[in-house]
Image (cartoon, rainbow, N blue to C red):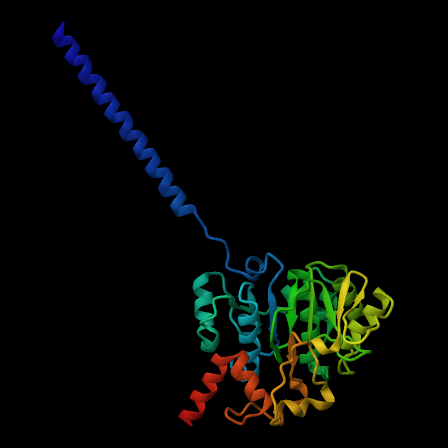
Length: 334
């Protein structure tokens, strides 16, 4: 009897060990399957900008060595909006699908590589314009016949990117001083003209859609600014009764805040040279969120000269010190 019990116990033990081994083997296969079949999310602007709070910059040309003002614009935004993604779309970048691609892209602009909230992504107009009123315009336009192709394509891309992602769009000649504490806003360039250099809207905002419709319907690439500030001014007048300012208070256009010119343009475009002059006392710009340096005016005339004591020299030192340090290094090498 005892012998029979021992045999039975042995058989049960063998069966139990076999059963447990099989379970372990199946679990291992399942774990291995999960490990092999797991595919990480594609590293893309759709993911990075998914919360609709990004700061967006564009490089329309294939240029891969942007000047100091562009780097300063992005750096100052990365510092001011340190808790938000700052995305620089560049036409010259190759396609990317992984975080490693992003790491390699950041090496192209080492000045910005230390800012963890800065991301570089390729700009593909056809993809950006897809499913918008701009797509049909883009397919039939002939860039070689356009007088201001870089400008009008930049105008189109800023509206399309804001429609798709939302957040804040900024030109690459804008230095950020402090955060803009508003979500849906436009900014006045003058008392009668709406700026296209900086504006913020929710993704898929009806105002942005109307801008893209106007872009195509009233397209005139021969007139500089017609597709930019001219367009925003036209659409704003259709959207609401023309806002008027009282003193330096902001106004409103329906549910969209309309910022006073002092917020972005304390130095207006006729006075752009003042940025490159020595001031007896450096202004604080306490009423401004950002400064537009009017690169279209000055790009062929002046640049930042470290140690010149000009206003722009001080702005670089204070708001984009990493870019400024790189300029000093370049000077020492020369």
